[in-house]
Amino acid sequence: MTADAPLTRESFRRLQPISAPRPVPQVPDRVWTDEDWDRIQRGYRARDMDEKWNIFVEADVVFMHRSWTGLGVYEASSAPVAGGGRRISSAVVEADGERYRSMGDEYDRLMIELIISAIVLGEPAADLRAGLVELTARASGKSDLPSGVVQHSVLGLRSES
Image (tube, helix red, strand yellow):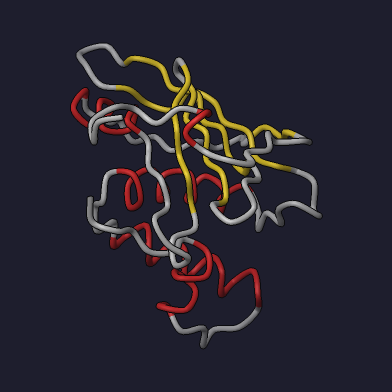
């Protein structure tokens, strides 16, 4: 497989689909360019233990699985936008609390965009990262959570390709 060959379901071991899908009522409103979509379709594979996500695309659906367990957490369906690019048209999240604990609809919307932007595309995504820290602090009731710890525990790192 070449470096530019898209990752597929078969590229990963131990993938487990979402067992109890719950619709995400609010999806990101970002429009990804055609160039972004080309990169998203190639997917992303975690390369070490500090990376948390494996991502691949089938048809128009972006599948986001935890790298250590293989558990499916998010599936985001995309659709073309008039004038070019794509946006997420619908998404589901794992609702089984034994497999994934959602911190709410706003959190799931943000995480879908953050995983695609920061992990797959390698963007800095500073506003999304700040939103992650804020939502996590709000959900936990702790205002003094170190942002680096929050980001690393949920999002992980991204190796340079």
